[in-house]
Length: 245
Image (cartoon, rainbow, N blue to C red; front, top):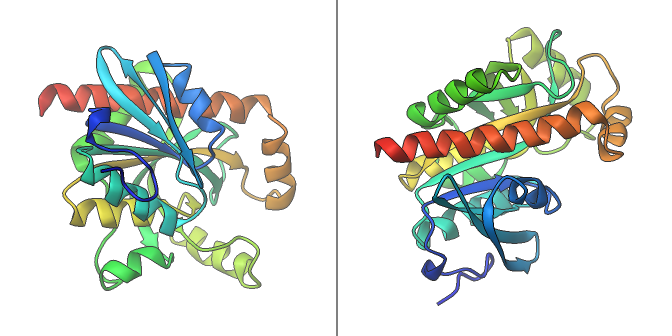
């Protein structure tokens, strides 16, 4: 029986999944795979399956926000996926993080709503240490610029307190912000899934986020290359981990 939202079942036969937010980003992942086959496109969940170095991989978009990400994690787990890496975008909270640089998320601050539906907010949102280690190993081997640290997973960058919130967390050393990492880590931990999150920086600290996102949507070269790099790191990291499991 197919899962209600992702519209996939165990016949896909893949243990690994790359989770972009944007359905269009599935094409970036597909370009790095062999034997690619389209699967479904239901709501925000567009999926394909292919192989990377002989490893069968699903690429499936999750849309924007923690709630749709949590649904994807739950339903992918139901069909036999045990390793998931989010590839997304973030806005930098620190100087020295260039457009297209990768942020490897070592932990997420749970300012989202989805993760709080599962467990009290004192519960930490952390990736699988082995998988995030493989992400760092892969980024280093490829020679891609990257930063490791904590991200803020919040609900919106248009709310009235956004600037105050950004400055508060910047002073605490947070590297950047997204919407989904906290939900991925929290649900993944509770469901015994190996998870990691790799973010492509699309906003340089000190630049207005609306202007930066518009430039990103227009296909700026650095951020476009960052998308390809985070997808490649995700695939290689899962491949390295699966060899050890």
